[in-house]
Image 1 (tube, rainbow, N blue to C red):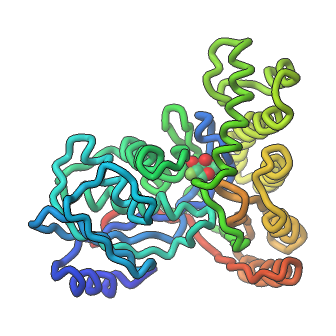
Image 2 (cartoon, rainbow, N blue to C red; image 1 turned 180 degrees about the horizontal axis):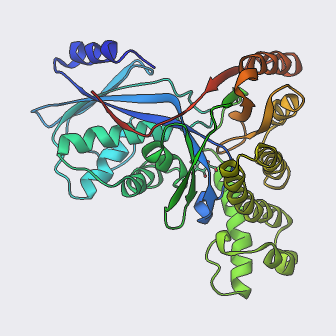
Amino acid sequence: MHDPKVFRSMHKERFGAEPKIFVGPGRVNLIGEHTDYAEGFVMPAAINFSTLAGISPRTDGKIAIYSENQGEERVFDDGVQAKRSQHWTDYPMGVTAILAGEGHKIPGFNLSIWSDVPLSSGLSSSAALEVATALAVLDLAGASYPGPKLARLCQRAENEFVGANCGIMDQFISINAQKDHALLLDCRDLSFKLAPIPEHVALVIANTMVKHSVAGGDYPTRRRESEAACAVIASHRAGVPFLRDATLEDLEKWGSEMEPKSYLRAKHVISEDLRTVAACEALLKGNMKELGRLMAEAHRSYSQDFDGSCAEADAMVALAQDLPGLIGARLTGGGFGGCTINLVEQTEAAKFAEALGKRYAEKTGIAPQIHVCHASGGAHRLE
Ligand code: GAF
């Protein structure tokens, strides 16, 4: 992580005021992909890559936002904006606008941002930024929310202000994560179960270096395709507003009325919900073999039925299979690139990471980034 002391003095030098600093972590999803917006199940963990947001008040009503990563500062002379401007500041401004819309009086402020969550890698750099900003702005406004409610507000910032049609998973885990745990989240009522990640298991995150984006065309297309399948089922059986409510039997019964692509997308989503709940049980029982099997099946389903992978991610998963220490591997996050998650025996993790990186570079000609991570806690203030 960035040295908070350096970050603090950077803010002080730029804005002439002492900041309060807040942290929002990125996340990795162990299993449960494209199920959140279908009100199903996901099982993510926060990771030790995060975004820092430093905030100090201003008296002139202006909002200044500086990103050390972008090397850019933007000043909004009339404070909170009503609309996006297709700029990276849409994320922090979106959160600010949503909070203002909730009735909070938000004075002018200086916000500085720094992050080590790799961008466009499926590790939720957007949610980390939204969540760190939300804590910072709420602190300034003298307000706070319970975690699940705050996650919904951050999701709204992304849906309504930024214009990316994401579900609730990323914001939820960034806020509500617990150190050394994965969290099985029911995306319908936001109830959750914590599952400890055993000490002997490392999270090895392998970045294919193929850029992923939720705002891009493929994510909303897949979402539409799966929702079209749900509409067919709902036209026969009441009480299926989301694929969460559908069964594999429903799919077999009415699948012939669906576009073939929609059928396959729904097959992934419905079966992924079952796998995700089963994976949590396996993790809780310490049944790593079953967890690995479910992850392998989840990757197959994500890649072949949902068509959410890419050649590089498929290669990264395939190349991991016979490496010593592997428990399970699959593509994580929104898809079409980004990172794979490998659960690996801790004692083998360093060697595993090195061997996987070498194999991937030889196979694809791309130098990957491979990180041995651990599950960290949720967003908080840095004292
Ligand atoms: C992205 C989205 F932001 C999440 O809401 C989720 O849909 C995920 O892709 C796919 O599981 O991270």
